[in-house]
Amino acid sequence: MDTERETRLEEQIAHLTRVVEELSDVIARQDTELSKLSHRVKTLMAREAEREAAGSGGVILGDERPPHY
Image 1 (cartoon, rainbow, N blue to C red):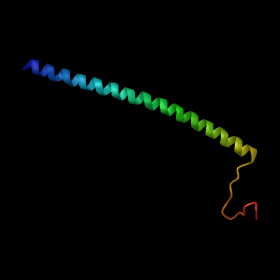
Image 2 (cartoon, helix red, strand yellow; image 1 turned 180 degrees about the horizontal axis):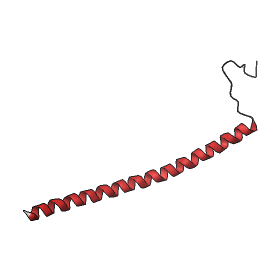
Image 3 (cartoon, rainbow, N blue to C red; image 1 turned 180 degrees about the vertical axis):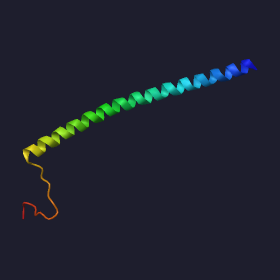
Image 4 (cartoon, rainbow, N blue to C red; image 1 turned 60 degrees about the horizontal axis):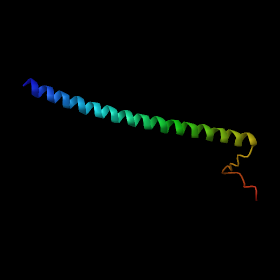
């Protein structure tokens, strides 16, 4: 009876170890992706700030006539 229990516990430990390793890989991939996305957002924010500072926003409001009228 003890041998069966030990075998079952060893199988559970092996399964849990595999799951933990898989989750660790997922977290590592997500961290890399999050870093890339954060960099892209910072870049886009900087571009938008430069565009706004240059005054070339080019946003046309609903009640505003386009410049070609």
